[in-house]
Image 1: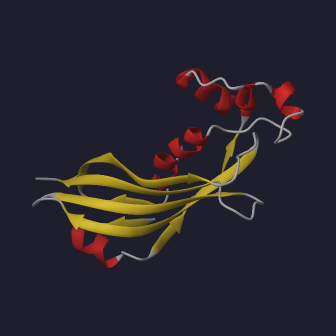
Image 2: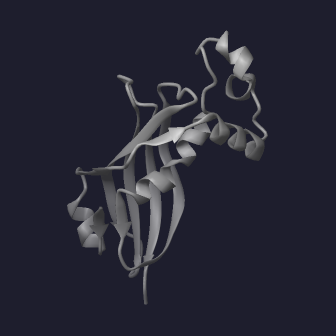
Length: 153
């Protein structure tokens, strides 16, 4: 676990790979729950029989499902100690490079891309998250995300 205790710690880590999460399985149940939550029930995600004859030979995870796994996976990699709050500020880029078949495993590899003082108690942290797909040559997703953290009073 990589721990950031200050803006200076974050700045020192810019350009550094800070860690890799554990593998998690993206099973059909998770895909179905995401489809229900987002109302994106496209057959390539939820119709197991039709997808078996489709372009991927099985159902695949939604791209945004893969992206939505980042907060949990990234919590395994780093922590901002002393932060009383952290919020998602957005993403500079997101690319979905390889489909994630139902039943496959993914993990995230994280690097620090930027660290800026927001005000006297804030940090804006830019991270590159590479979602690796077990057994695949190319990642499932590459995202450059931005988080805002506020340190305690």
